[in-house]
Image 1 (tube, chains in turn blue, orange):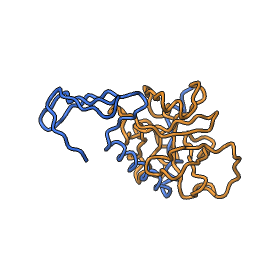
Image 2: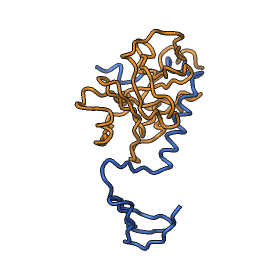
Image 3: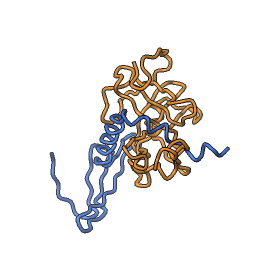
Length: 79
Length: 150
């Protein structure tokens, strides 16, 4: 892993077309500006981890299936 | 073989291909959609290779009215989406012991191109959409349950 020290408003280039700017640092939080081609997906990593975790939780509730029968959506009664 | 419906026959053309699987289940790429029950809004998304792997899903219109997001150009290309009418959006439900704790994952909708039978779970980096959105506020328990509970 490469570790760099940057000051506010300084930039990092990754390859030819990804540019990361340190927009601000405030009380332990770093605000970053990212310029990248549209096809590059940018995600907070903990969100991906959270989705994985939730998918695993969702896949393991088969014994709760009968609960589904107890659920009815309000919107169903409206037409 | 399905988790919730025993053994069923499926047609090749019912299979939805998820090129990258789902986060946490990257190795499972083929699913079919099965209505949970005739009068139920829930749809079971069943792996065709692993009977034990199935997700309960629901169309977001049942849960929330202002659910809007953008599908990236890259994803549109990957799913070969040409028109909005071809796509089905589903959100995975996580059941809990208590009905009121049941949640839907609004942050990671499943996008399915029904025409091309291609699917993907995308992640919306929008703090407005929770990974665990409680759906209880939006549902009411069916009559028979009210009778059973004390």
